[in-house]
Figure 1 (cartoon, helix red, strand yellow):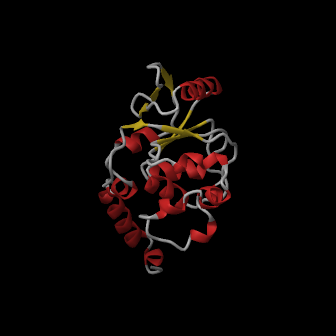
Figure 2: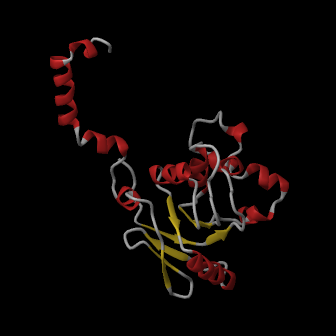
Length: 201
């Protein structure tokens, strides 16, 4: 079982750069780590060491709950560590113009909302945050909506099935076990009708 993610509320940080890849999010030299706890300490480690402006928000005393990115956030390698690091750091949602597909799927598997917005709504969001950078946003998964600091609401898009996964307490194993009886029936049928396949186990 997993936690239900129905909404995300809190301060947002803006990353004004396209094509932020998973190696920037979680540098490859830390991939030897297998414990998810503590991975947030290595989030954007190289960019922090270089003093890059994109990660200036990480010098604040508390992490943002939402990241606002541009095009193709999370592109590059398929490393799930990038999402683990974001979640461990405290980021619960990323709002962007587009995502790397594998990264987006890794987000939903780990309870991080990956929502896209239209260019027009993205511009509204950036303008609202520029006017009130520390004001909270409020993202609601079921409504696929994002409330801006001025109280106005814009729509967000989630990939097919992602809202249902975020709002469910079931993980992928739980969903597979729903079909336990059918799987057992299939295995019995294979052993009966194709015993040569069953002997290959």
